[in-house]
Image 1 (tube, rainbow, N blue to C red):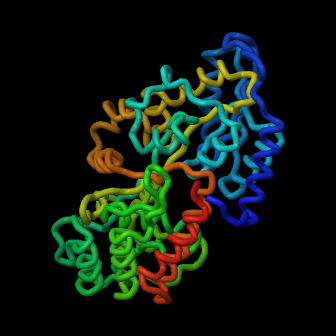
Image 2: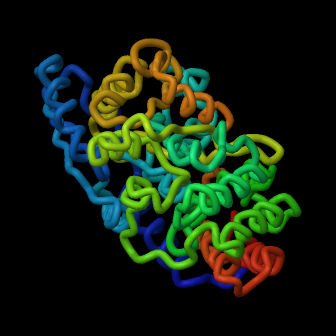
Length: 414
């Protein structure tokens, strides 16, 4: 397909060209895993802060290895990764968010994963797919993320609700009951617009049978299923069940604590936030699966660990990644961070196997979906963000908004 190059596309092409000029692999086997050496590692957000502790433990068991962990904020991660890749200076091991994988694999700066050492069957399907691009796997799934429904059980009783909503229709009915009978300000919270609104929309989209891209990269965001999902999403705002305007930095857990918001879709880290910050509502909230349309399907997020194609320490990097991503390593990581393991065997013992709330997350991950990796996936999802906002603000119908997004995305897919 021939198309006019956008500024973003030009920038990506320049970065790719620079990278491929600078990076041609190490040109040899590199340093053996048993040699004395330093591994450089970049990790993002909370993971970057916590990984140094695990690295200290690893160094005690591997006296020849020094692990230098550099924490990188998610707000600057993409910019730093592009700059490092273009200069041929990626670290030996790098945390890759799901939306980044296609872009950096397409640049040729990541080492393909040894799929004999790391087996696809050990990980959740969506996590493995997220780490793959163009028929090859470039990262080992480290942790997963999905969304489930958080709801106030005490306020549900006041609203006359015996169970969590099991369908999208029941979700809207429950939101109305919370407002009318329990006196909550809103029926639920879901994001009305702005960056990454698509993450809030995914449970609605996937549960309806819709998607943004097919597995072979074809844009299908204006399918009847997707239009229906956006109509459902938009109706929550049209009915006054969810707030149309949210200030920057809004923290839904504060309104969940006060009772102003009785339901929201959230990730696993929110459980510990609620326990730590709002102990007074402990026992007064619970989690439930995404309400079903044709099925109950949520988004799959998370991160993988990748090795730079230019690294001279690939053998040691592989051993370190093995330590972090096997069942024991991921169970340990969960205890430290509350990040959900991508390795299915990590869920077979301890709290991960016995906790009723965690079983909801485990079941949700079995069907969770992720868009196929694309070099310009961030640009693609931004078009959906805009479509969603135009509907929640009453500026467009779902069909018109998604037709527009479809046209824009068709020029971005490869």
